[in-house]
Amino acid sequence: MRIYKIFSILALFAFAPFAHAQSDGHTYLQFGCDQCHGRVGQGSGAGLRLAPAPLEFEDFADIVRRPYGVMPAYSPKVLSDEKLGRIHAYLSGIPEPPALDAIPLLQLD
Figure 1: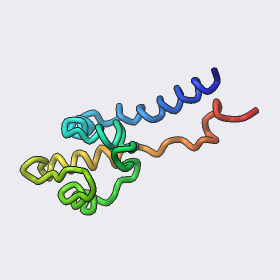
Figure 2: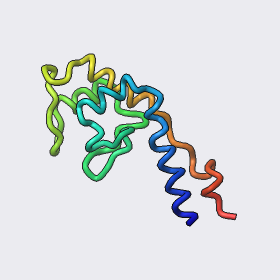
Figure 3: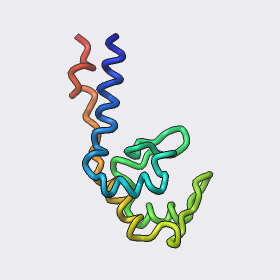
Figure 4: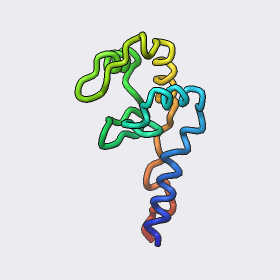
């Protein structure tokens, strides 16, 4: 039963940052970034971790415009620089998760 509580708390920390910037997060979701990179940029089997601390904007934009692997390219006609900037701002605003030793439920007694 304790393992379920641990997963519940970790899920809470994973999705809590999304509430901080819904306007920027909306663009992230609108373009389907969450489908591969996770709702808060945490990454998945299909996409790399983008947050917290994404690449500098110029490098981030370069990869979005000319990706490698299976990610589709997003030209400025599809994803404007303004919207790309909003996505980057959203990812930049996601805080680091707490250290594991700072979560009381994870402490071994």
